Length: 113
Length: 114
Image 1 (cartoon, rainbow over the protein chains, first blue to last red):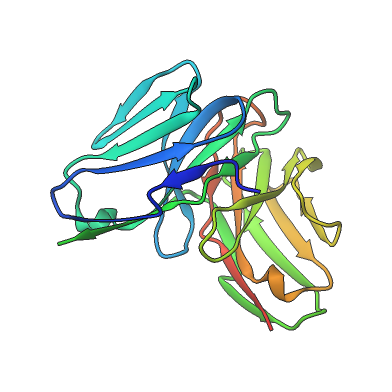
Image 2 (cartoon, chains in turn blue, red; image 1 turned 90 degrees about the vertical axis):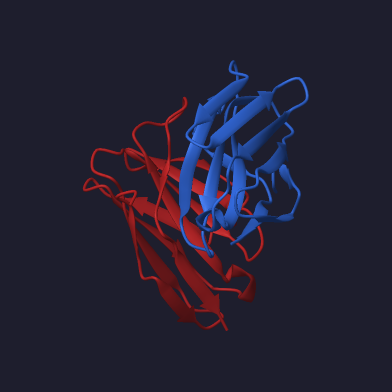
């Protein structure tokens, strides 16, 4: 079963605009990660935010984490056509003996040139 | 490039058959996880191997089994294939189990069961 849900399911924007995707999850976590997937291929790791962090930046990416609301958001600024992909959040559950990731359902982002 | 490779890229099998998918992890990574991703869904955890032993399993039946070898390669075996096994199978390697170690995903094997 999926741990989290991304919102929206699909998002279409123009190049240069910002894209915001949200993720909600159910259990306490060690960390939350965002991944990108192009055309049903492998997942590319974007950013990891630990449970004791509230915000993290990496280039054009900004991630926030609100553990009280069990939610996270991914902001992509100044989007490019190459950002077109599916984006997934994944959580690493607190207390787990593995680094099993539980993925959300994904947001399909289309950036129009 | 994540340094994780998978073979084959695509595979078509018939219901009831058996299949073996292969993954080569990043050098030095002693943990490998396998995920199944159905069309339009997020990946779902199948199981994880740590130092050649199974170290956690998701909600998958015993006909899904795996092996991890000392040379950082691993296999996912699926017996008695069912139509619902059609999916993208992803492996991911990491430096250590637990904690906040980044997982590096391979490009996946797309399995179609007819």
